[in-house]
Amino acid sequence: MRKIDIFDTTLRDGEQSAGINLNTQEKLEIARQLEKYGVSIIEAGFPASSPGDFEAVKQIAGTVKNSIVTGLARSIKSDIETSWEALKGGVQPHLHTFIATSPIHMQYKLNKTPEQVIEIAVESVKLARKYFPLVQWSAEDATRSDRDFLVRIMNEVIKAGATTINIPDTVGYASPIEYGSLFRYLSENVMGIEKVKLSAHCHDDLGLATANTLAAIENGATQVEGTINGIGERAGNVALEEIAVALHIRNDYYQAESGIVLKETKRTSQLVSKLTGVVIQPNKAVVGKNAFAHESGIHQDGMLKNPETYEIITPDLIGDVTTELVLGKHSGRHAFFDRAEQMGFVLSNEKLNAAFVAFKKLADRKKEITEEDLFVLLTDQQVQTSEAEVYELESVQVQYGTSNIPTATVQAKTPSGEVEVVSSTGAGSVEAIFNTLEKLVNGKVHIIDYRVSSVSKGRDALGEAVINLSFNDVISTGRNASQDVLEASAKAYLNAINRQIVKAHYQEQREAVAQ
Ligand SMILES: [Zn+2]
Image (cartoon, rainbow, N blue to C red; front, side, top):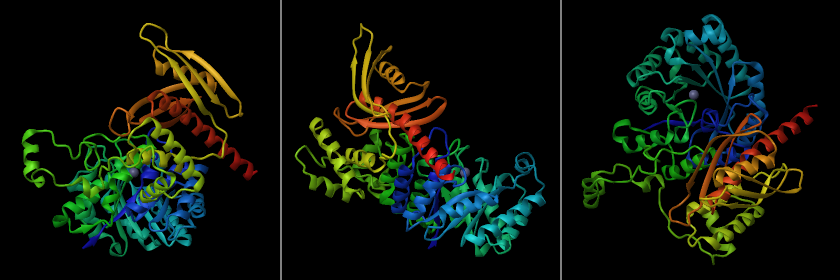
């Protein structure tokens, strides 16, 4: 059976999409889950792009042991050297470097001749190989490049020491047959291609990312790149869970395996959705809420007689199991800690205790605590960072009636340590809260996107709020899950503001060290 390596770029190509901002803790959490999910390679970020990215890549490289950790670098000496500093702690240091090869990119973006591009690519791969045992080279915009130019440049970068060649459909332009034939052509014409890994990287601009990736596998690709839930630039990258499940379900046809632990699919998908704030469309293949729902009478009838009539994938396969009632009001610390461990959380005692306090508070108000609730509580602790002073909501009170003006009063601890009480009005309860918080944070806030949803089922379910806002022209996303949607909304708002404070705090620290 052929092995197809899964290269996950949720933390690089995915994180770079609009409205997503993950802090180091959140990135680490996703990386740990990706390791559990069984991906071969984790692209943890672009170390030279910012101090925050550098730090996250370094921590991930130092933590993850069962997946190779890589980072992206342009064909620039300083990018490659910075990446080495971030990645050298990894088990198998791996670098991903690239240069554009299409006429339009070479002429307008790089302002270089094809000959110059070959020279730069060779130099950067040679330099990278001085540090890294594994070097992946990508021909950016490969699907709009001249095939014979690709053969020439690939001949040279393989000679220079590249260990993986990636052929990205950067702008999501290729059709499946075309993309497959490009893999075949390069497999047959590039010298030494049999010694390196051949990788596919597809974007979904025409809705063809999954089809293109599978076409590449059929035509010689030994590695595929993508993201969880298909997040990424513009229309996104290929959704890796779709590829892993397709290889499994249609094993008879593809005769290849991914090494992915399919039972971790749902958990991985939910974690990424929660931490990025990017909702999964209900009818999304494999991980959508309705992916296993049967509505029509004829289908339901068939399902009752034999599930295989209409169900090719079972929820069980991807770990989508509903465990009702997990813990309740009377569950003790021990049961709670056990459950956290079973769910795969590794938390310090301090964080476990904090999660337990939150659990007790929730159990007072909610009859049944489900695994989804626990997941939210524990993840919140897991990604908590407390190095910088931030806003902390102490209470929020809203006066609302259909015939009077909604008024909100907020009591909160400010970064200076003082407790402030502020109040304001608005056209509705939520607007009153947001207006009050804008007064509290004392800056210009513009709400770009705001939504609330329920975490689990039932009228006492946790409410989750996700808010995307700009604060003094810097954009960030905040989220929170609480018993009440108004409380969750207020906390999500402050969470978005706090992310900017924490980021600025780290930036200052680094600058102080650099001076
Ligand atoms: Zn991409």
